[in-house]
Image (cartoon, rainbow, N blue to C red):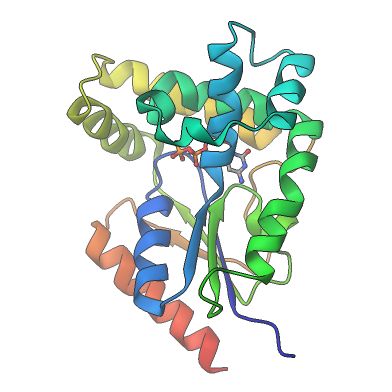
Length: 215
Ligand code: CDP
């Protein structure tokens, strides 16, 4: 049996990788997994338990009792949950516990056509043999502007300067952690969206994906 195509999309916070992954998956008829959501669920569970997301025991307990009802929680996409997700994501036991689910999704995607996974370590650790790898990025200032507008539209009162500070500290934590740090895989295509709107970024990503699937 030939393996189904897997598209790995990695990049830092608010780079546009989530929207890109959703749109590429829809255009190709592939299933999509936003792996950041898994880390957000674990981070939010720790916050709701009144514990510190940096506490290894609390994070490990939360991933063992993975509470998927939190997928519907309005706080899942908040800035605080993003920070907590990044803290629990630095915990090797949390990453190990989520590994199999992600690999299984890539190998057996719903719909049976192919999979798009987006995150931080998809092309490097989760699916190192992915058919196509994209590394999506943009300057911290442009990413902060996008995230600020997104949070503002959801009623957040966080200032743009605060959002930029969050993004910079999250980038630093994600790139410097010893386990599965955020990094561009050597065989990933770099997609810098600083000057691109979402339509242009999607068009470019689809060009790369279709060319790779033809070869
Ligand atoms: O949407 P945004 O880029 O802000 O964040 P996200 O993709 O929802 O991920 C939240 C946090 O989860 C990140 O800052 C990472 O620390 C962590 N994460 C990870 O460690 N590995 C992944 N594959 C996905 C997310």
